[in-house]
Image 1 (tube, rainbow, N blue to C red):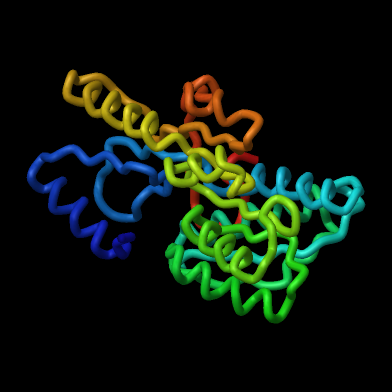
Image 2: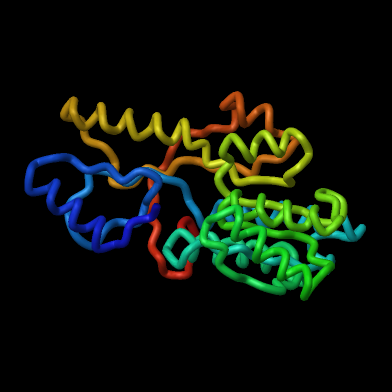
Length: 251
């Protein structure tokens, strides 16, 4: 459950009053109120743009073309209206425009971060556009739901259509290894959590920590799945803030 900004601010300011240090996990947008020791999370815009670039390759391969020249149709499954949904949708659209400008986004609708809603939205979308090439979900769960809906209509994933999303959680990785998903943006939540604990330990030891810790993300496909699971694609975090301004996090 994603809490409202007012709820977060109240929690932060209350903790500040009691001298409790605050770390923001999987969030790199500085709060407008209260004091936070460090923000730790991944670049949602940049990750979504990288996933879009790979999506262009998938569409181009299906149509026997290049990314720059291919046509195709994409449907976007948004999360609940929030900075998370905004940044991921904007980054994905920017990635499509930069890499496959002739691909059309035929729809963009909230599926509320849910697999069931993703399935429902995709089923309706396919009635209107039966030749959708790719379902992109702001979260994997919505994209998984879309894939299930398409398969129930007799379409074959990774042949008739593709499903891509963001998170890289274990259920998605299992589907990817089984050929039932196309690609995910792996944000490595386990190692992100380790980064949070490391920062916490540093704070309690009286050490200074950066205001922003930007953890890596990587497009995970069947080709690099083993390397991702082994942690070989993890790189050192860097610093960069993210704001809901419609612009890339890292220029």
